[in-house]
Image (cartoon, rainbow, N blue to C red; front, side):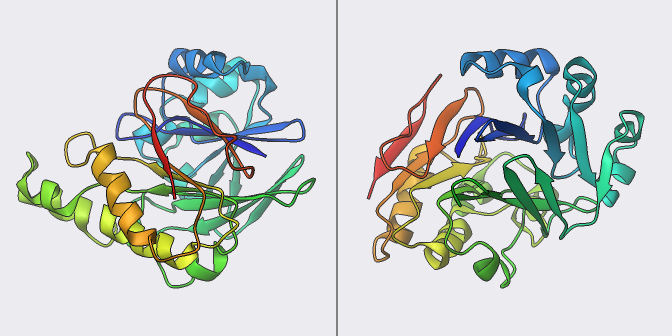
Length: 273
């Protein structure tokens, strides 16, 4: 299994997962031309993607999916609530599922998990490769981590995890109090500190890749997020590679083999523990 983050942040999110000839996209939050550009940067054509799973209806996750599905004949999957929150998904005949459902797409089994976020029926995903057994969790846009996640996402090989904001930078930042409350609230976004707490609980010697995602451009910094996560994991058995995904560039591929990660475009900060 290989995973690329085509971009992650408030301006757009998309994650490509590939295993044994199966390619799927988790979210398509960029305009279709930008999606095509970012896919081309890693040598992937849009029509080679089997389908797209949309985590929720917010624009930075769904912006390009309708145009992309029409252009490349994708099958699109979204929760019933997400389709209700973004009716354009009905026009492309998106296939509904209930959060908690498992989708079988070629070599990939994709389990969906409800997230605490201010969407209608948002989900995180756990993708497992039938051919190799590799497990990848993609978890972003959640205000807190439900206790059940520690069991659901145990023994991962690859973890893409939201580390949205530094709490001090959020308090001192440009947003009005109402927006600060939304971002830092129970149905908003994970702070660096809370992301570290969850990652610490999930850390084990086989976790090869930890990718920090959905970093705020105004209330976070990749070096700060990585430092916070490094401090959280210093006493754990994690010995993999830690990276911070970029809003403006594709990064990856990330795979279960250590040392197999490389930046494809733009800036990507990483470190090994």
